[in-house]
Image 1 (tube, rainbow, N blue to C red):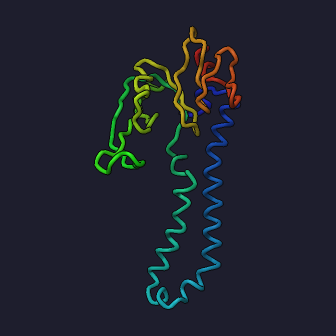
Image 2 (cartoon, rainbow, N blue to C red; image 1 turned 30 degrees about the horizontal axis):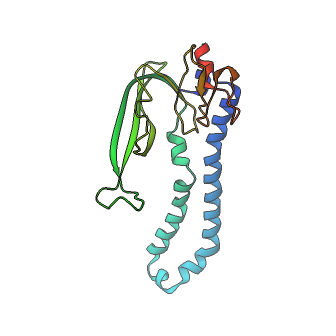
Image 3 (cartoon, rainbow, N blue to C red; image 1 turned 180 degrees about the horizontal axis):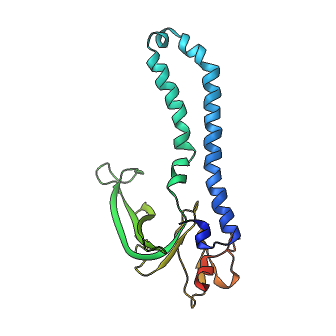
Length: 202
């Protein structure tokens, strides 16, 4: 679903465009740095006794150098993200073991991680599975925040998926920064972007 199909306000369209451009620029810059590093070091590298004998080691080394930007630029996530608006058909919560441990948990227990997936029906009738939340399990987590029938909105480049407020609601969550703001203001009091409440007026 493209931004113009959703008739987004100009500021949210700009946010999505900038969010798409940033990882691309970082990726290109990192690749240029890798290329410069290759040209300035390849003669020395391939003239060393060991690598001169086993060129494959040098090839693998530079291949890794050129692959690093794929992981640090965020470009992989940029191509998997998407702006969407739709109705929740199903909510799925999974709890898995998280071994990124702090001090207290043992290697056997670790932490638990909760992940929320939404099955969202878009305006064209298609249903897609969306991962909207994933963090270590805590006692005060609201895992039932999303419910079937909710209309939800996600803007490309944001880590939030928000519920479109109903006409009777007085507060709305910003789709960009996640802060809850008085719906009558129309704009987030923190970041200044248009609140997704504009969808409830359509």
